[in-house]
Length: 315
Figure 1: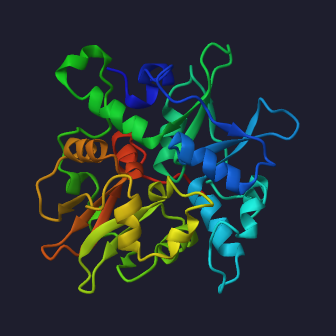
Figure 2: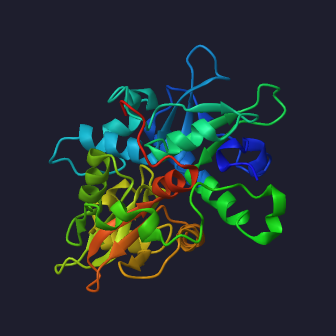
């Protein structure tokens, strides 16, 4: 068996199955970009180069767009369809932080091995632009979830010799494979916060999700960038709603959080299955009172099975 890192993008079997890459000119108004995302039920857009429309120079996410509108608006401004910042071009969002990973294009050819991509996915990169030098396969965005689906699909005996070799056996207890994640500091959102405050917190801290807790500190929901999927200029005012009400109307994966008890006997494979089946990016570790005490993310799982738990020097 070859190590997972030596499998290629072709092995993933995604060619022709992923949604076509959605690209927009850099001058596209944020309002139009949000409408495009909502119409296609996606959360990322590829931004074309000024000089070459066929070349992608950045990727912008829905949280980036909404955070831009929120950060640039005056504190007392009520967000609605008339917000002038909705007419700013997408490229203006990219100038807020030129080094932000959210905008960086991590590009690989479909014939490359997964080694560099898995290393990047383990330490802060969340997606890769997969292109084909032969122009045979249309470009597509590869997400961390695609890797977890591949791990799950090749974990059974039916995969045979095609199954990858993992750095850590999938039967390993999760708390043994990732002990540090069971005591990781967790940033939470109070249930009394507005959706706007919650999502601003995510953007400020550079985290894609956070648990929503009640007055006793118990996890009652999870807010994430995915929950902005249907937000457009016409519905942006709903961000002023309490976060729990906003999630009831917009949550893409439901309000119920994906949690596992701190002392539960859960394997790495169990965790992968839960994350894939629930279509979420975080598994929240809770104590007996449902208070969050840790978190395991897609990045953690990928780092574990690919042997990339140690951060590269200078990272």
